[in-house]
Image (tube, rainbow, N blue to C red; front, side):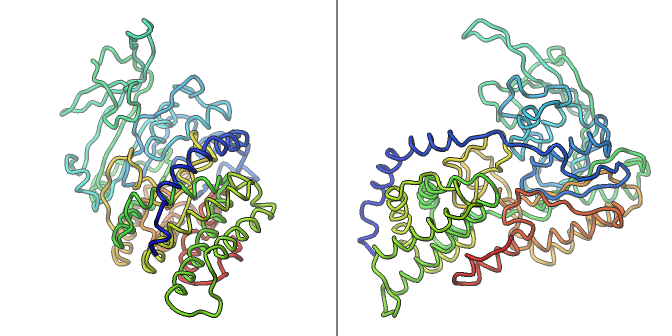
Length: 513
């Protein structure tokens, strides 16, 4: 084993220097603005309510605005009812001239600019005045993370702009600002231009300094309290209210793939090293290519596991390391020859591909059988959706730890629900939605698997429960589920992948998504 560990770190550093510029150049030549369909539905019938499933939550923005354009929901003044463990109102990182600030997005570039991250997409929609009331229902299991929040809090919200003077270039700039007001709290802040993702929404200002453009209501309510309010307050949500319903799978719980790897002794640094290599091999440009790459690396892990097994005992099909590397290279080149996967690899240079595969295999051979199986379970994926504003095809494919494995993402509370807890949470969701008052015009559902938040073990059960619940309130005879084409592992999602992970052998090579 020692022979495979010598010089790996050094090789990683050398290959990074040699390949990064070429990979970046190749990636940039292929970079393109994501093209959005003019219509996602073949026929637009305003009276029919819709249900859409996406992978990452900020991808719902495309569907919200298309629904409004088709007359399914109004263009302004909506009530957004969200069931999620995250608020989605973090400050946006990118706010240049193409962002549709305080007006309806009229160009694809403007809509694309809004689709940034799952923690800020609600803020992006609010800045275009799409909704006037936001009711965020958060799960009781996440009470530790929201210890400072009571069961129900309501705020008057003002959003606008303020002037900022830059001492560096002696110029004034406009920054967005917001005010939260109720009987206990009255504060205004502007976006922190030095640190746009500052979760506290930046720098404190006076109410007079914020020039208000849009006004609305924010209600933050725990799930059990939401149930009580609907039972005791008749007018809390009205039947004629233009309602947009949005549900995230992490309403049921939250997982951490990084912790799952650490449980079997795979360190964060080791995960980073593997991610560094696979990110130089794969430059996926679609969820289909992403899924194929995950399948490919699953096969490589199977091959490495077999090779490792035969290092300690006689096997009829044993091979040396050179043959192992050649087998891996053949898997890659065979996949690239298929038209659907052409261009998914960062370089076409076989020498460089082989060098990267050698490093990857040497890293994998350091792991135990248990660790390899856990790595295969966690898998490999893009760091963000190909629709995201900051998507780039290079250096973005990695071990699928999601945002829970990113150093720049705030800590989250992890809660792996049991099957019984999933059933109980569904019962609570049904109690809230089945009161006869809630009648959403449009429904969006986010899986949040790639991001690492949703509990992967029960994601298929959660999705089936959510869909069964939703169809009871959106006229099941006239609604059909639309699955976004950029879903990780397609329509079947993690359920299909889970079955294949627990099935050894070449079945991974022949999957119809």
